[in-house]
Length: 74
Image 1: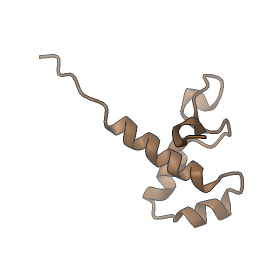
Image 2 (image 1 turned 30 degrees about the vertical axis):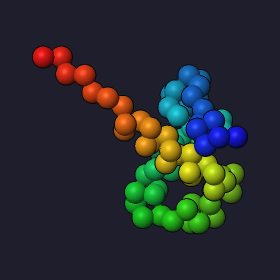
Image 3 (image 1 turned 180 degrees about the vertical axis):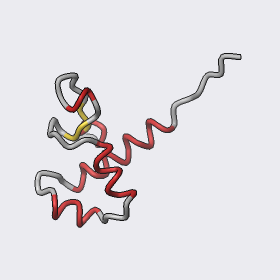
Image 4 (image 1 turned 45 degrees about the vertical axis):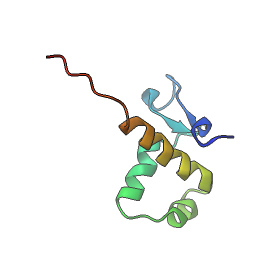
């Protein structure tokens, strides 16, 4: 399974926000924990349904999203 294949988007789950493998764990939740200084090990300890590859998938997803081009309507 590629990293990005772990990220699921379903309109009936978490308001259509990207989640991890269909779980009710949003990508933004994991990114927020990392941004707050949590280590991947700590996140995995507190969320046993997650896998190390899920955290990598969240980071890959975020990197892809921030690399979107911007079109200025001038």
